[in-house]
Length: 63
Image 1 (tube, rainbow, N blue to C red):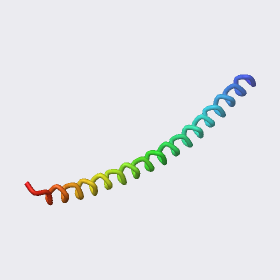
Image 2 (image 1 turned 90 degrees about the vertical axis):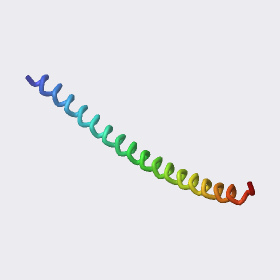
Image 3 (image 1 turned 180 degrees about the vertical axis):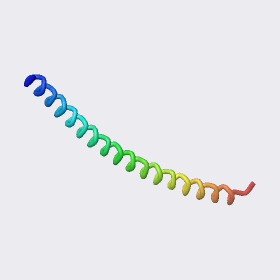
Image 4 (image 1 turned 90 degrees about the horizontal axis):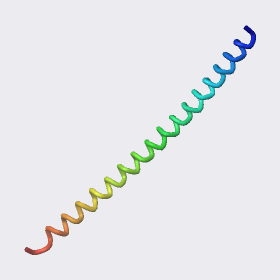
């Protein structure tokens, strides 16, 4: 009985540690995702700005 309780305690400790590590990893992945989304938005804004400038230049070229 004592050995079974010790084994169960070990399994619970390992499961708790795994849960903690996965929570930390999830937090880091969410942080990375937010940073990448911000970068993607900045690039999309730059592309849109370049597109607007290009359209303006194209309109100024005589036919």
